Length: 97
Image 1: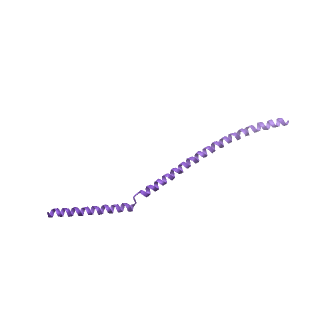
Image 2: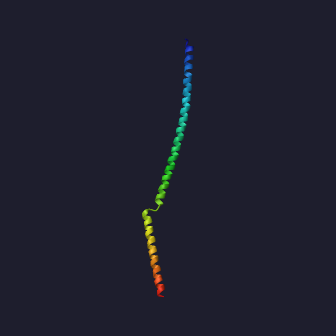
Image 3: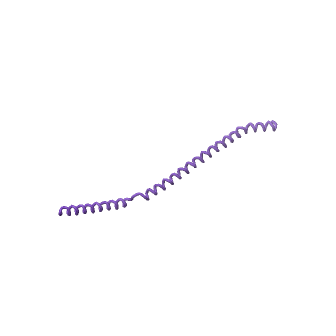
């Protein structure tokens, strides 16, 4: 076998390898694109979660606590009691006249 024949055989043997490598490069490129898209999606989700957490924090800071509600109940009870006493006093004063 001459050198040229040997080189031709090696070339024929290499063609599928070169083709396979080109295919692998394409697939790796597709995988890289998919991974980049996945990362971008994760980053968007993280940003959304951070935004939601900030919103929750704001809501919690502005939301009435149990103590706030208890104080409001006490004020309402005091006001109602005060009004009842005033009404009773007015009724007594009216009946005396």
